[in-house]
Every structure is written in C-alpha cells, then in structure tokens.
Image 1 (spheres, each protein chain N blue to C red):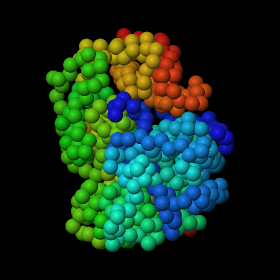
Image 2 (image 1 turned 135 degrees about the horizontal axis):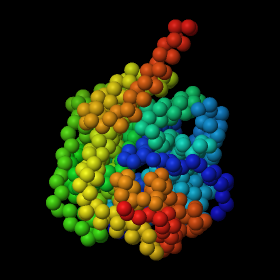
Image 3 (image 1 turned 90 degrees about the vertical axis):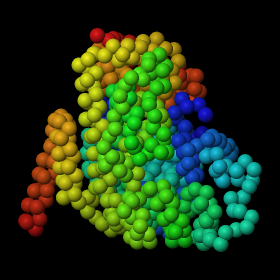
Image 4 (image 1 turned 180 degrees about the vertical axis):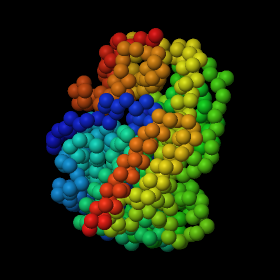
Length: 174
Length: 383
C-alpha cells in the first residue's frame, strides 16, 4: 500500500481493523467505496459469494438482527441493541482484552460499567466537575511555567464562576 | 447525478485561526435509536425512515440554528468529501450508502451525520479549547432529539453503539496538536504511549530523509505515564510512524467507565502537556538558531515556491515546516492564519471545490495544489 496516500479509509468499513484492500462497488449510478481489512468476512462474501454464516452454525445468534457469534468474533459491527444482551460475555471479554475500559473495571464483570450521562438527564455537564477540571489544568500548566496557556485557562475559570454565580442568584430569586 | 442542494459557504475551522500549537479539537457524540437495528444491519427503507425522522426533529429543534440537509446518495463525491474534511470526520462518513445524510447548521460549526457508523453522530469543531462548551452544544441537540425518540441504552454498557469500543458515553474527543519541534528533535521517539503497542511509535525520519538530513543525535523525551492513561496518540494517517504535517491527534481511548467530564479533562491535560513541551522545544531551537532547522525550513519554502505537482502528504509536510518558521519569526511574507488555512485548503475536496474540479484525478489535483501553494508562498522568504 502506498503510504503517501492519506485520504482513503483508515480502517475497515465493516470491522474497524486497519485496511488492506480498497473495494469499489458500482451499482447503477451509485459508486460506493469501502476500505476493508485482509480477513474481512464481508469482502470474502462480496468477492467469492462466501456466506458470512459458517456451514455449521454456532448456537448463538441475535434474534432481532441475525448477527452470529462467529461474526462478532470476526470483528463485525454489532447489529442492534439486543446484541449487547445476547453477546454480553463476548463484548465484555473484548473490551477488557483491548483495554477499552479502565483497568479497575476488568475484575468487575457484569456490573454497571457506565458512569456518564443517562437518558432523560437534562443537565448538560456538572458545573463543579467542569470547574475542578479547569483548576487542575491550570495548576498543571503553572507547574510547567506555561503562563500564556495558564492565562487562557484562568479566563475560562472566571467565566465559569461568573456563570455559576448568575445561576445561584437566579435560583434564589425563584 | 442530480444534486439536491448546494453546500453553503461556511466559515471554515482554522480560517483566520492564529492558534499556533493546539490547532483545534473535534467533539463527537454517538447515539442510536432504540428498537431499530444499527445502520449496517438496516435496510434502505428503514435507513431512510431514520433519516427522515431526525431531519424532522432537527427542523423544529431550538438547539440547531438553520438546517441544511444533504443526502449522501444525491451528493457529488467532492461535496461529501468536503463536508468530511470540513468537520474533520474520518473516511467512514464518505461513502454514499442510501439513507446516509449530512445535516449542518448555518455556521458550519455542527454536523449531524445520520446512518454512518451509528444512527446519529453529532460532530463539532472547537478552536478555543473550550471543550465543555463544545460538548454542551451537542448535548443540547441530543436532548432535543431524545425528547422525541428514545436512545438505545443499557445500565451496563451505557449508550449503545455498533462498535462496543464507542459505547458508554459515546463521546469521542480528538485534539489536533501541531508539534514540529518535538517531532524534529525526535522528542517523541521513546514515548511510552499506551498506543505504542499497536502503532509502533518510532522516530520521525521520513520527512527529514526526503530533505537529506540526518537527525540521529537528537535526544528522546519520555512523558509521565499517568498523563497517557485512557488516551490514544495518533496522526492524520492513523499511525505515529511519521505524523504527516507534524500533527498529533490526542483521542480518548475509553468511552465506557468514565464520565464525560473526565474524558474532556484527560484530553485537555495531555494536549496542554504537549503544548508546553512544544513551546519549550521551540524556545530552545529559536535561541540556538539551529542551522539544521534554518535549512529544513528554507528547503520547504523552495519546494512550495517551485513545485509543479505536489501530493497532500508532501504539501502538509512542507506547510508544517513553513508554519514553524513563521512562528519562530524566521519566515516573513506569509501570515500565520493563511498558513493555518492551508491545512484544510490543500486537501483533496477543498482544493477541488476551489478549482471547480467535479471529478477527481490525482495528477490534476497535484498540479492544482502546487499552483495554489506557489501563489500563497510567492512572497515567503527566510530572514
């Protein structure tokens, strides 16, 4: 592959592995370009008509979208929300193996890993946490004697504090 | 191919941008609608349905100022590429699968991408390091959509995505940091990045090799380990072997098991660390007036002023060196904001739109790029 070619897919359109093959599909007037990895099951199926499903089907398959455990293991994208329930163990294993979750969670399998915003949460971001993050960045930047950057952060902190005070005043009036 | 409507003239990120090191940050939120298969497993009809639904909601949403809708299958490839380049969206956004839709606001600061990897991807580009503000803008849009349609969510995995590596918060932040001094001093050589196992971080040699310069004596710098936890360091071409344009991308590795505030804070912290180290390295180079760099920058100006064909990779490398020279105060005759704009304007679709080229041809684009750069750098000289 020519390393100089920048603007082409960086990862397989199907499974996100590094791409090895550029595949262009022309159907009528539509031209679709895919970047695919070497072992892409989708590519094999397109080129040789091989089915994505193995001859002896695995016992596990998503009833909603038809995704099989074999495909999940080959790195195919998940097909629907139900896949997270059906393939929970496989997904958990992969996230831990690829270090896609903080290490402290690796030992707490099947527990509630998510700790960010949840549906229906109207508040955008926690103002106190925002302030803390900026203050930490300011202290680190001052530690590195980068005063120009520190001034920029200080301005952001002041603006946030001002906003917070305004919010508190509005709250009291109510 | 019939075009639905023309992409308006947006204010472009990095236009009139005088940022010298931390150039820009992109913030992206991934969401899927509950009860629907994810886009890869959705037939055309249902993809169209999802797209229509989101278009309808955004047209009434208070959080979205002006709705410009572009259906990928009715767009020219150059227009699709243009939007992807404008919002610094990676290649997966570019193909024209039916039901894939781009929706932008009037300012060109926010993009809602429908039916790409997930049903909804909200993208924004932030230039002033106000990462929280950028996320809040996206969350406001998300709230408007969520009032009408429920998102796929589980207590264990958070917001669900077609790629488990993006579930949880669904938040992906990329900070673009221009670090020529660290790259050329080989300060990144032994960086103990957690990504190094995958990306084999090695010394930068290619661009100096093409300029015929040996930099084997430069000493490496090791960054403190804790600042790298949960982060990926990469570049425009997806690895760190040779960061094109000396641009490093700092991205969060974890979207699950961390709060949004923590993600923003860790990316900011790593980017600011790079900014400080780069400044220190530049100061050293400036004080020593190192002939090695004078030579590199001078050659880059020569290449830009005299080439008749130039690919993106070479263009970004030489532009990076001249930007470096401008910021050191060594190069005159070209304003830094013009050089910053070139990081966009020399890319394929921006260039093709400027030159009104409808169908890509690499030799033609390379000639056009060289001609454009010759014009911009005609007055540049090293002092």
